Image (cartoon, one colour):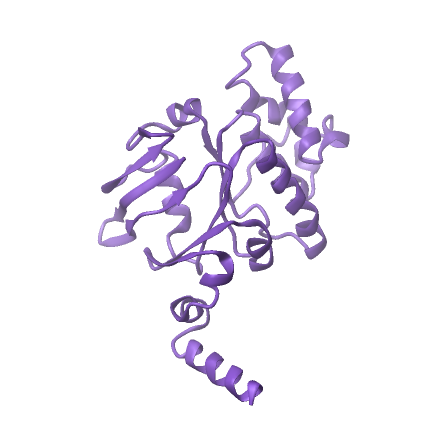
Length: 249
């Protein structure tokens, strides 16, 4: 459904994303992981039209969307969430979700009905009339997902929707993400919570310093020496192998 070829994004002398080629297959949950500063959010922003790539291409549903504006890409069925959530604090949860729903439902009555259904889908059904500023961190994360989901996307890009959540809250949001996938929405997610990545994703790409260093199933990529060293530092893979050998003997 989504393919990038040689995607590159520079900020002056800094190459934030270099020659990145990834794909997200229809019906799958694909993860993009890597340490802080790896370029993951920059890649997301470039794919979704918030940044213009310096090289490479983005194809969505067989159509070249490179350089298109975010609202144009949303109209085609791709939308992203943001790592730092910023709801309209003085509006109700329902009206916040309706902001996304208006992309498909111009009549207010229809938009509100759709927004209410989406709110229930993400577990906010009992808080629709609540003012958004009063939500917990977990509630705001769900609201961010709901606003994007209300645009009726075919592909949903989730940027660290579990950051800042407790283990219990993570356990509660994982089935919601599976439920979104089961309605036919393809998902590409950035996530640091490896427990969730291992449970959710069919395939994973690992980015480090703008470079893709590994791809495969989550179980495969976490065993890659380059991935271990990206997260834990130089020599970590050798130390881990040595530790495993000692324990096996």
